[in-house]
Image 1 (cartoon, rainbow, N blue to C red):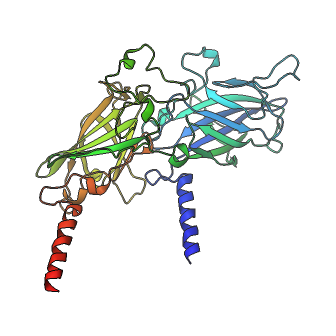
Image 2: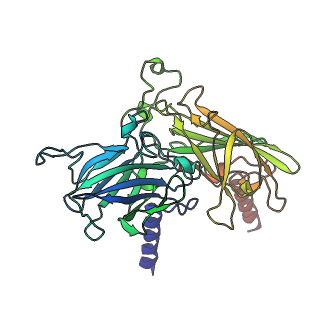
Image 3: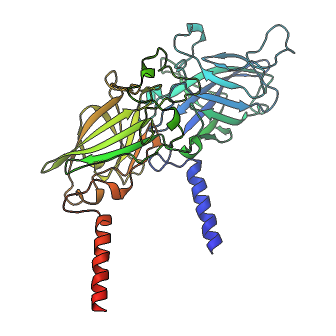
Length: 431
């Protein structure tokens, strides 16, 4: 029985690591291939990347998509993207393919490319918004002309071994599956056309695969206690402790020091938690029917600013948000019967860009919540969030026994030792 239980625990852990996110259980990135026409030796396909994740978007330097051809296919041309390598095309005379590699790798084009190289929803540098934040910007697409391939539904072989970096690791892609052909409406919306063939690839994210340490942490405070509960020490790992920079260092005044590197290596401000991002939750005020919370997000990375940032928080009172003052807010209801999760993100052109570490490297807002008298309390840490995610990655919370407590309700840890000593003396006296 012990072995069976151990096996089940390992299976559950593996399943969770593979992608399941309790706050976004259906979130995924779907890559759709629509064959639009047949050619003499292959087909022309529109490839669309849909980010169906509610609060995890693809940041700079953007997505990188790869796969393995099933036969000896080549890419004659691409519109709206490009492959990173051409490969060996020496056997071709005259027209040279865009890419001859068995395992092509495709990236989005940068903004501002010539009009004849653009395609619908392309050329954003691979940056794709989260579906819950802006569905219209949660799409990226390009067009391929594939040669030396099948020229009918029966002879086309689906690509395999799909990989997705968005922009780093963490995504696992399943096999391509044929699905009902996509329908399209003409611009005048009076005629419907259909793809000749369609297949989908679904990729899911796991934070355990993306990195071994969290990328953000949470600190807590309240009006009823002077104690500030900081982020846990080395919450995001201390491997960058030797290369961190103090906030008053002269290095920060050097030209180009804030320029991101190709490998996105951070340059962190020296802190005890060593996290690029800290989220602070402050219980600010208490009214008769309402209570107010202040949320502040601070960036400690001198080489990274966060555009289109998103913050997801789980708290039981988010089912009754009265007003959010400086952020946009959207409730997330992954389970229809439970409304305890919400997404905060910046207002466009106001604070949707979280700047790099420094005087302007923070954004903040206040939230007014209406009380439910049956459940509301300041006791036992109820006023603090259960889960916090920044840009789709879960942040490390402090241990519950360190939360700010009400003055008349000291934590159990402070009462345990005196109570034990008193009990021991009483027992010895009686005995």
